[in-house]
Length: 153
Image 1 (cartoon, helix red, strand yellow):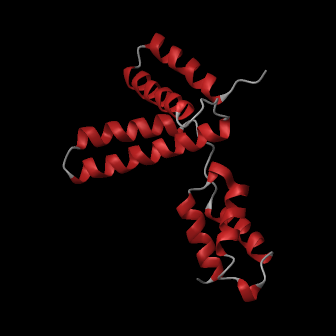
Image 2: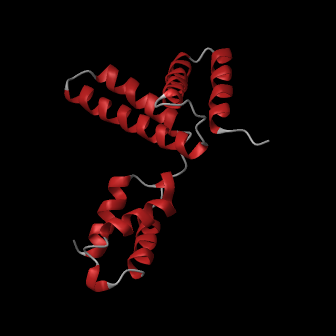
């Protein structure tokens, strides 16, 4: 049986504990807690699949990046550095981001499938199709901006 992302993170936590890597230990514990919280949210408890865990990890990276920016603006460099280090640890579990050229090619392919007369109205459908193809390899805002530019909206 293949190892799930959640199992990999738990294994990495054990390794980090043995290595006495305090930053990695605390970061992975926060990630495992976020996964556990997401699994019990709602009416029934569910086991998250790898795609959902990847989405959660991307969200955690965004949170850390935003916090680092706020700390940096507030003159709290040490806290900003810690947030960036945590984001880097969490980001190591995410797939590599698509390059601009690769994203543009996917967007162009999806835009070509749309009737040019209804291009503005089809923006939501094109964004959805591109998001399905790229998964966690491109941020939603980046996809939306690329589609808007391609459709001239």
